[in-house]
Structure formats: structure tokens, C-alpha cells
Image (tube, rainbow, N blue to C red; front, side, top):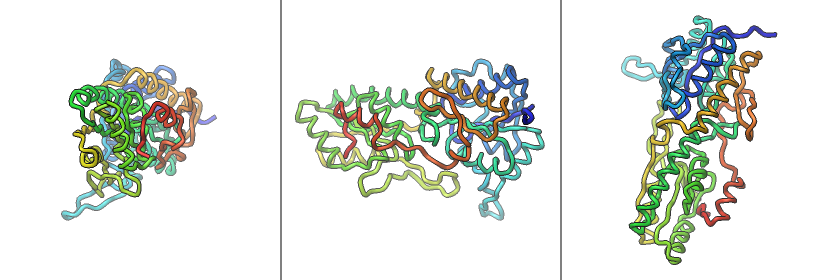
Length: 364
């Protein structure tokens, strides 16, 4: 039987989301109480690993943080160890710091690394695995787009925020007889828009996986108006795009691990709808409100399950696995399988069928 770890590291890769503290708590408490394992928290994601900024986590450190948003370890979604920016003579050069990260782990005698994040984080973890580091992955993202798992923690909380916002614009849309377009996050995946759109009773849901026809969108709005429904709600994923068209890009930064930053589709669609229908149209971009705040109970429970499962894998000698949830069953897959892959909404997904059954349009 392989030697069990005596000391593990834990870091939160990528951006923040509700439930990170809950999973840090679960990993730390279960490691200490079940396995007598020392836990080292790595600050600010992979940046902290490059700069060797770590601290020991105790039971006291993680007490009382279950319902707290954000992460006590800090987060950084701008650093990829394989392309670390270094200023040399006024010019930015990119240096591979992967070996330094691995050396810092070994120097601190960290036997295994628990990485919490999405596809980008698992891609970095894959490079560590290839250098002999035992990495256990925990799926975190509000986009719910990590390959291999049906759900990630942070998603339910983001859906709750987006649904609440969509519920609220119903009243102002109805009062002013307007069309309201609400832009939600999700990158290239439509899970957040799909769930929040259905939960709020949105009339039109636009997701990246189903490119929309603007005329079909406008026809749906006109039909509602003709039947006395003088307002409409459009839930648009930030990655939504028209048939034959491109996604709306907010900015492009080649220095970032994810250089393309989507955003602005809500404004574009609202302008087009008003121009084609003559109906007053407004838009709202929810932005980072979807990533902030306290996790909903579902995410607190899921994060606790995931964190405890990660430690259980370490105690049973597992190597390089990603904890996943299939249906309501905890399982695990090879972490390399999830690296760099996104889980998109199948166009024949049952939720799409259910939405269409109650009259929701997807613009196609």
C-alpha cells in the first residue's frame, strides 16, 4: 500500500465563487481529524505557489467560515505558471515557472496538492501531475462547465442570484411595458442562463450552444404583445451569438490565461430588439454579483461532500483524481481527463425540452 500523506497543500485556483471557504473547511477539518494530516494553505492560487507564500491551516483557522463568501486563502485568475510574466528591460517576457512550483512543494515536504477550480486550474494541475505531484481536484465554477461532473459548487448560488435579479426585473418590465434583457455569466456554456431563465420564467433564453435568429426573438416578443402581454424577459448568456455571427467580446488581453473576455451581448441584443420591434427595451448586466456573497445551502453541502471526498481519496492511496458528482453519486475520474475541457449544454438536453413545453423561446 502506498505511503499516506503527512502534509498536504490546498489552493483555490481561478476566480472566486461561493462555497470556496466551505470546501477549504471540509478539507482541513477532515484531514486533521480523520487522518492526522497537516494542511498547508497556499495563498492567492498559483501565484502564491510561485512566490512560496503558504501558511499552516488549523481547525481554528477554518471554524466559522462555512457560510462566508470568497476565500480565506485569496484567489488569482491572472496567473498561469507556464506563462508567468516577467519584466525585462521594459518588455514583458513569459517564463515557465512550473518547475519552481513543484520545487516549492517538495521543499515544504507537501505530499499531495488539493486544487480547487475549473478547467483552467485542472490544466495547470495536469502539468504538475506530469512532474510527479499527486493532485486531487475539486470542481469549482459558477459556469458549471467542468468536464466529467454534473455539477460544480458555486453554480447553485450563482443561479439563485441570477434568478432573483430576473424576478425583480419582471415588475419593472411589466410596469413600463418594456422588454428587459438580463445578461448573465457562463463563458461558452449556457448552464447558468438555462437554469436561471427557467427558474424565473423568462420568455426567451439565449445560450451559446443554440445560436439565435434575431427575427425569431423579435417575433416571440411581438406575439406576446399581440396577446396582451406587453412586456418580455430575455435571459442572455454572455457567450450567446446569432446564427452565423460571433460572440461579443468585451476585451482581449494576451497576457491573461484566458485572453478573451466576453461581455456586452445584452446591450447589443437590447438595441437590436428595440430597433426591430419599436418596443422600449432595456438591459442589465449582472456581472460579478453572481460570484459574490454567501453560498446557498446546496453549495455548502456540496462543497462539504467534495472536500471530505478529496481527503478520503488521499487516505485510501488515490492519485491524480478529480472528485465528481454524477447524478447524486460521488465519484472520481482521472484529473487529466478534465484538463482544458468544457462541458457544454447538449442541444437535446431535457431542460431545453421542458422550457419549450411551457412556451419559452431559444431564438431558433
